[in-house]
Image (tube, rainbow, N blue to C red):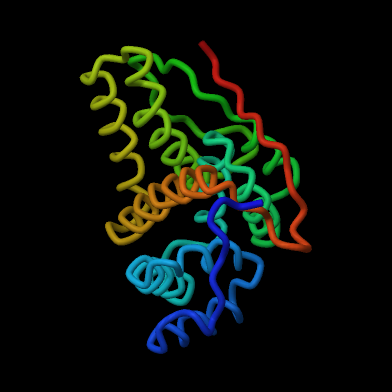
Amino acid sequence: MALLPPVTRDTIPADLRAIWDECEQRLPTFRHLWATQAHSPTVFRHVWSQLLELKRDSPVAARQFELAIVVVSSLNRCGYCVAHHAPLATATGVSAEQVTALQALALGPLPDGHDFPPRAGFSAADSLVIDLAWFLVWSGTWAPLHGVHPGLVQRLRRRLYARLAAVFSPRQVEELVWRTAQCVAFNWHNEFLELDVEPGVAPVEVAAATRP
């Protein structure tokens, strides 16, 4: 059972009920998440209005958002997010084999000369999205814990950014980085509060490996 139970529609401020109703219509399988965050009117208003707007109007393909979310959620071992987003990734055309490959990604060392080549089984653009998601978790968690020199992190970051900027517009880069980093926050939020998946959502076991 979740540590913080979800609220109900009749307990939230009246000015938030339009957002609540759109969440119920468009994101019913995420009810435990948005109804828990509705404990804070500020969080619910700004986070879910932003997410709904990105779904309505973003130049980033839904497939690419889902690739990034499955990657970070698997690396962060967030069973709630993987259970929800793996099927959404499949619905955007990501194959079951590709989803399995994303869930099997592991954090580990990168050589100085790593140039983010396309990943087997993925297009060049999709590979960059996967690399972005992987790098955000790697640079924020694995690299500091393993004493990776900040200069190496910066060189790799700038190399990856150059690859991204050659394929995606500035708006696409910003929305990819923001939505992916935001998903990391969701991962930690959901794990700390021990959110349960909703009825009808198949739970998954997530055990991302980490290489020494």
